Image (spheres, rainbow, N blue to C red):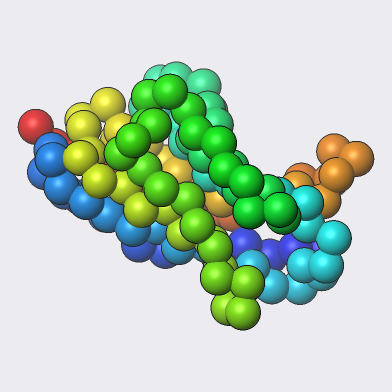
Length: 116
């Protein structure tokens, strides 16, 4: 089992910044990729950014150029730096760890609210 704990959410005005953190613990060996998903109010969950064990990253088009995903392997922690936040970025953000073969682990989610 992998335990994931998100932190760093909150409320910010449009144009502001937040940094989310995701601390991983437990059976973290074998994690192929980690990422961030979000679920806006009344909408389906969507992928935001992914970082692979190789260090490669990918982003949703809606956040490309504004968000940066990174990791600190020594601390078993992943980050999402969010700059230029927009009201449409308002959502519950989830951390996810992928060990392959549909073996996914999710954090509890953290609220990010961006006001105009």
